[in-house]
Image (cartoon, rainbow, N blue to C red; front, side, top):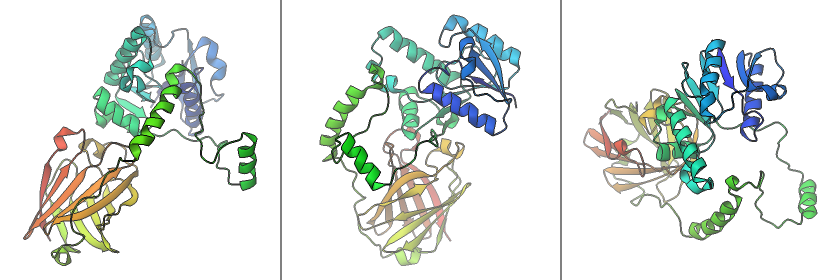
Length: 366
């Protein structure tokens, strides 16, 4: 496959660092890449025989130059073009992959103070999201924002976190840490800001929001499910398998096991078996899971996602389990109800994904 990369923004802050590091990784992987760059930024492209440069004077984000850029891409005969931001040329005849680092102006429109620039950003972003065959975003919260504010189909989004440069490493030497603290007269707890002070970086807004958040956090909480820690049916259920009817999540079987004073919930899908520890004493278990809770997640690249889990017996026949996915707004609830040799598994999402509200799968005990 002949890969093209749009490096016309390589001299920008943020996305430029992302582009340079990505090109270095492509080169180290032995991937041949056609790199489109501005005439005056060729010296910023990492030196590698794997990277073939195609210079241009077509500025990114200038619609009247999109035709020139598309012609260059077509002449280079690449099979796809990766653009590391939302400023992709319109009219491409090859599949487009774009990286969206954040969508702050969609969530907080006034982070772009000019109404004209605000409208231009929204138009360009929504167009590239519609044109892209695949979208890379760098965090779970950006994925949530794309879904909530731009109505992006999750099936074409991949979360690939930014890497950490080798020059950054934790410092554990207490004397060195104390010396730095004394040098800058730092208090016991402090916030460390790295970046610029441009208005679009929202530092002032961040500080005001942090102060307001501290007040809200004092009373903000997600309570564990209400109910009893045990059920008289539990002994009969332990070790038995609930075989579920076929569904779009790919869940096949469910099994309960004893796990200390609580339970372990084992769900099997096409990707394997997923084990969740489920305390039933009002506490939370913290771990990670690759369990898919949305149809799109069965085709999106899987990776462990941090989660907190708690459960309780709503009544002797119904086990309620809440999953809180860390640093996301999502905490769906599973309800397993057993009646004789039959069972029903119900999934309720707390936000978004309307098609999953009250979804039920029937099963049989084996």
